[in-house]
Length: 195
Image (cartoon, rainbow, N blue to C red; front, side, top):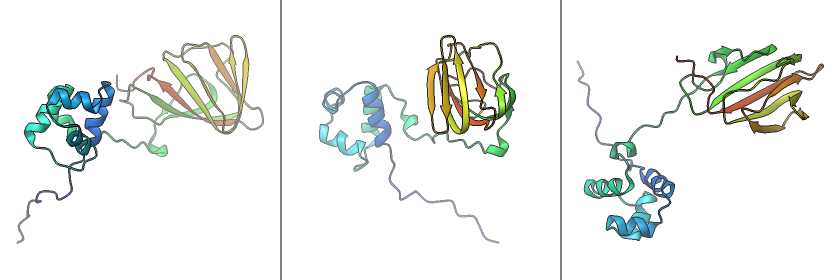
């Protein structure tokens, strides 16, 4: 009977430099300001941000305290989720003759990605509608459609992208011969499928 051997320590270096740099720049701090606040040298912090040196635990604690950054966040696994097209749940935002799939995870509240396959003549409806979001981006993958606003119509063809405030009343109609396939990016997500 063979015994399982626990894995040894990893020989690959910890890549925490990007996390530290992002925290520093998000706060508008220069290398010089962080060096002064932490008591470390600019050169050391620069090498640390490029993952060219390994800090001691005390140094990490010192930097995280200055940056108001939980030390555990430097080592946390990133949340990476894949939504396959065949597994993407179908949703209905109210259009006719359109198949919509939620391509972002249901639990994602920061952004929502929808893929819409619009049959020829498909429509968002005769009445203009709004979505509770800050911004919508519509990218036409194939076909063509017209997006209608209160004061204008915007014609879009494959390759075009349109950005507008999410609370702007609008509707859309797919080309009567071509239909359209589009991606909608909605920020933030107007609803979460988890509730």
